[in-house]
Length: 115
Length: 105
Image (cartoon, rainbow over all chains, first blue to last red; front, top):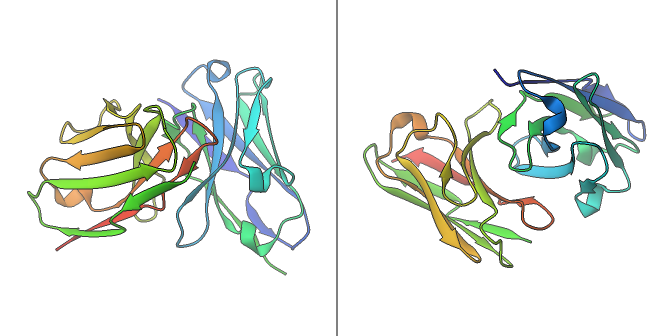
């Protein structure tokens, strides 16, 4: 069974950084592109970015390119999202998903940016 | 590529045939997927590459389209289909549509 479990969310002050993790199991992690998507409270889905199997290609939505960094550790079957200079607009549930078509999703981790 | 979904809210009855629209600002080359999101849950992939049904998804869901215009059809609405539906293009600079909320009439 494909399983994705996000962690690392919580309350963070404006201007600070936070790193999210996504632990994958039930499939061969290093065979798939992986992606991150977020959803602000009561809003729609926003694609953040994606990373290919060997980390040689990483794509971001333009508005987040300078704030967020996606990485992966294939030995640990884990995907990461490093977020910096966080603002209230970054308050959202953050999801990781498998594949360039986002076929499987985790349950998400909530990040709240507030003083 | 911007995606415009219509309508934003759709009221329908159990048993209705329902059609949701997604229009791109440029050619999407069929790299279009549809997701269902129920309240408090993660999105679930229904359709990928315009018309390929994801494993485990009921056959009452189908997708069609080409170029800039795509459609998700539910042939006979079930009560458990009440949710918000998002289209997503992964052809160029991946983006989601704003969603169509499907409610019971």
